[in-house]
Image 1 (cartoon, rainbow, N blue to C red):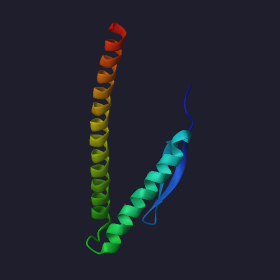
Image 2 (image 1 turned 135 degrees about the vertical axis):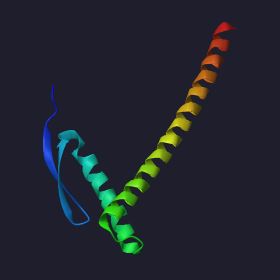
Image 3 (image 1 turned 30 degrees about the vertical axis):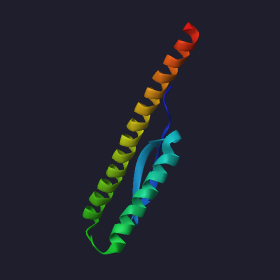
Image 4 (image 1 turned 180 degrees about the vertical axis):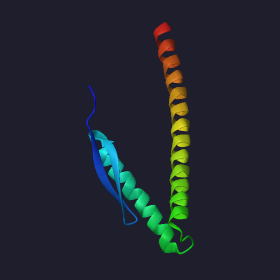
Length: 98
C-alpha cells in the first residue's frame, strides 16, 4: 500500500517552501520547520550573523549537534538497558535452577 504524498507549505524566516510529504508525517515536518525557524530567528536577532545562508548553516549545525547528543544518550541508555536485562535474565535463570 502506497502512502499518500501531499505538498505542504512551510514558512521559514518569512520565506515560503513547498515540500512533498507523506500525510502521516506532516505534523512532524511542520514542527521541525517551526524549530528551524526559531533557531534561525534567534541567530539573526542576536546580530552576530546576518547572511541568511550562514544563518541556515549555523542553525543546521546546532540542530545536528543536538541530534547527535540525543543519539549518544540513546545509545548509552540502550547499553544500560541491555546490561540490566542480561543481569535480570541471569537472576531468573539462577532462581529457576535452584
